[in-house]
Image (tube, rainbow, N blue to C red; front, side):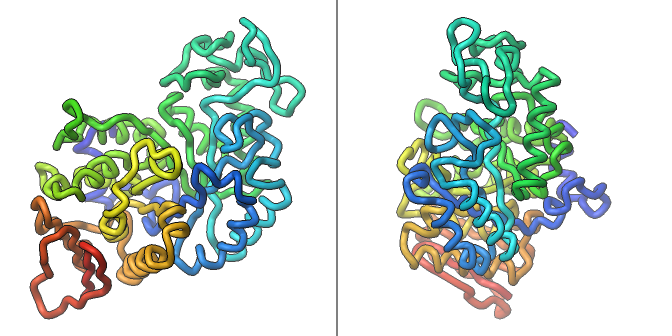
Length: 417
């Protein structure tokens, strides 16, 4: 199933679809919380999150994505070194285990951030680079590092993450060790879900192998590349961008979802008075969500795009319009920690209200959608014939006496039957 038509067909005709290997993808009821930002390592993070677990559960999140849990050369966790040490700048192994136990009690799954594209060595080897992993569990020599990043391994099967050794996944010993480590995270440490960092860095066939080996309940990959621009102008048609994400999901054996960077790129431009962008030429949502919603994790910001890094931030004065869109629509919505906990109770409570409506009305990743309006200052849609919503400056309400207003705020409103 390597093309769009087949992907779309799979969603439209899922009544005769083969059962998915991953049951949670099949039920489509996931709602994720990214439970950290770029500065979290400075704030006794495991202890902070443990206090928030009851609220995370009550708010309706099924899974909380935690920062990388293992020892790292950089405090944020994205330059891992000793993969089997759970003492990190986020807190000690004991504090992490206390957090995971609390999450288990409250039935919120813990998602591990899996950083396996690159790894900082402990000693200098071939070429004077830090490309050997001596004196720690999972000790590798230079053959575990791609030749393009200073090792003795094979060429990379993806894009290079520059400046540090990139892991050569073509090596059988490397894959065996990674699978053992992932099984340890899953079965011994207690992480249930995986988020694959920098998934462009190695072939998605290895993601398939790692998921089959460790059997996480739910997985999502970060396949992030640039949307289609003409100069600084975001093109209306982003089909080739979403196709690249679709191809990654396909080649990962359809076992993993992927972050819907296409929807983020379009939505954050659309809310600035260009809401016509939210309907593609075939009348569907224009992101990955419009083609393969059960694999599309929709989001507004993360630790890279927002937070203090702010590489590609969602316009802050349109955040609630963004959440009104992703929390009512098909796909698997993800909420960013900053918006939920750092921006004040007003945002927290509005987001919770939208999550409540999604859950109470039975909206899931595959709910059918009919786009009613897509004008510069008005977007309106009917989802699953259960809810209607609008965003934008213009006034609008669904026709018919059966609709009642369920929630509303600045430039958004949601109705239910």
